[in-house]
Structure formats: structure tokens, C-alpha cells
Image (tube, rainbow over all chains, first blue to last red; front, side, top):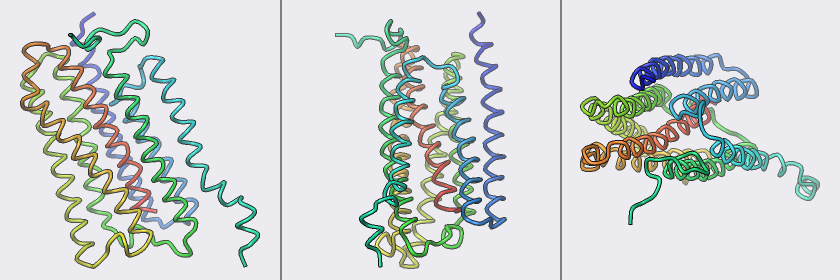
Amino acid sequence: MDHSFEIRKHVRTYIAVFVALLALTIVTVAISYLHLEVRAAVTVALIVAVIKGGLVAAYFMHLISEKKIIYASLLLTIVFFAALMWLPIFTTSDPIMYNNVP
Amino acid sequence: MEIPYTVDARPDTGLYNAKLGIWLFLASEVMLFGALFTSYILLRVGAPVWPRGSEILNVPLATINTVVLISSSITMVMSWASLKMKDFKKYRVFMGLTFLLGVAFLVIKSFEYGAKFEHHLFPSNNTFFAIYFTLTGLHGLHVIGGMIVNAYFWGPGSRMWKTDPERFTNRVEVAGLYWHFVDLVWIFLFPVLYLL
């Protein structure tokens, strides 16, 4: 296998990802000028950010072709991260606090 | 004693040790920033009023900073790819650019901070500025940490290229993984703090 040729192919991908990231940055800023209502604005901004983050992780961090043990540890991280993000929702379902608010 | 598996993959993980090490470290970093993001949500949901970031923060400067960090990610990955292609000169150029883009990010950030301080806006003003300065400050510290490592690999650390090129290439890959993570965090910080 020509190793150098492989890397050159990767370089073309990196440049394509770079251009996509720049374009998505413009998209995020442009959407913010539409002054959508908060729920829609949050949803759209997070979708674009997840796509951008996914591109960085998949290509720049080579997650698209990684070993199983890294996927396994990241899966565990995602589970715990999701639990953290759910914490604010758990607090709003706290019956003691919410029943005592005048 | 020689450190094992700096170049060759460990049979059970299929990776050189530093790579698994950096990923485990990044997992802990996800939880660190995750804790602050969830604090942001709690503070925002619990606040009677919450400002739109775009009304009190400088969106054009933050947009430029986003482009700067994205650019630094491509130069970082190119520095690693240059080593893979055995082109040390190109590596020095790309790694140097990565460092300079880090400097540019911090300079722009310091202008932003300076403008806030001039208007007497501090973390103690309200919960918005408290979480804004905490998140961006912690991210800035990560940028500084990455720049120190990158500067070392650009300068004195690059001597290893002559003695153990494969190990050096792996070191640069690991530094790159960290740097891309710092970029990734900013990709989320930017819309959350500045645009929503």
C-alpha cells in the first residue's frame, strides 16, 4: 500500500471538512439574525453545532475509523453526559420545591 | 526502562498507549464541560429573565474567533499529515501556524474581555456573566495549555523526529486530538453563549 498516497487522500478530506465547517459557521450566525423564538433557535443552533462537532470528531480526530475500545469508552461518556444534561429536567420535577412555590 | 507501546499497538487494545490515554482524558474533559453546560441550563431555566447573548456580547469578534479555531484545527491535522508524509519542514510550518492561530484567538478574546471590564461587566454582575466568564475562561485556559504543548513540539520536543520519528508523529497526533477537542468545545460554546 502506498502510505503517502493514502495520507494525500485524507488531506483532501480534511480540506473539504474545513470548508464545510466554515460554511456551517456562516449558517449558524445567519440563522441567529432571523430572531426565531427561543425553542426553535436552540434546536436549530444545536443541530448545526452537533453536525460541526461531528465533522471535527469524525475526520480531524479520526473517529470514523477508530478501534473498538475508544468507541466503548466514548459510549460510556455519552451515557454519563446525557445523564448530566437531564439533571435540570429532574429538578423541575421535584415535587417538594414546586408544590411550595407560592 | 523503556516505556512500552509508544509506537506499536498494544495487542489487547489495538492502540499505542498514549492514544487510549488521551481519549480517556478527553472523556473526563467532556464531563468537566458537561457539568458547566448543565449549570448553564439550570441557571438559564431558573432565571426570571435571560439576555440574548447577541445583544450584550460581540458576535462578530466571536465569529472571527470561531473561524480562527477551525483554521487552527486544519493546520494541526496538516502538521500531523506532513509528518506522516515525512515532510518535517511542512510540519514546522503548520505547527507554527497552529500556535499563531492560538495566539490570535487569545488576543481577540482579550479584546472581548477588556471591553466587558471597561463597561464594568464582571462575573459578579449576574448569573449570565458568571457562567459566560467561567465557560470562556476555562476554555481559554485549555487553549493556553494546548499552545504550551504545541510550542514544545514545534521547538525542543521536535528533536525526537531525528531519533524516533514514529513516536514523535504519535505525540503530535495525541496533541492534535486534544487541540481538536478544544475546537469542538468552542463549536458548542459559540452558539450557546453568543447566539441564543
